[in-house]
Image (cartoon, rainbow, N blue to C red):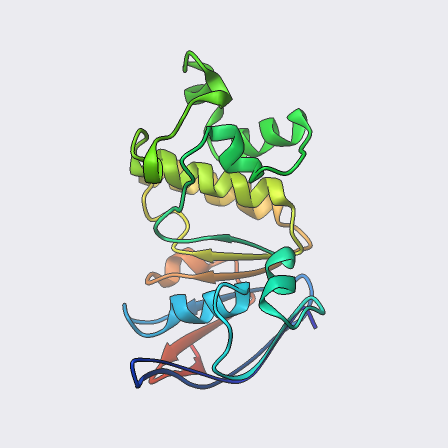
Length: 212
């Protein structure tokens, strides 16, 4: 199994959000999770990505069981892109050595190549504090390029194209589908139509997963 979650429980300030979530995902499968805003979908992804440590229960991702080790196995795109006060290149590579061809492929897949080519400093353009010098859509595409370039075995998508217009979002989703072939993918969305490529779809409701 690529992902194993057992009896995951999580609360904020004593208010339960997850109430015993169990999930197993075989390597290479794509699953989707839908649910209302504030229902715990993003919390679940943060537990599966190693951003949060489980308060109760077990998380194992691609053989890793500690948050630090899990983070090495996962590429994640959040609904609100998190950018560092650095260049586009550094936001994609996260400071790790990376071949130029890998960066270029990721930028092309994320529909960034034409925009970057028109910038005086290209990939070395500074994005500003919290990405303040780029638009929300551009920030989201940089985050998507980062996830593609990392080439992790597990990819987690939290409303990954929410900041993109319809045509761009569709093109980016198609690119993600191609470049994540053979990988384990968990996609979260408010819209069931965004999860049509998933083999299984769950609804997170009342802190538990139910087959949609």
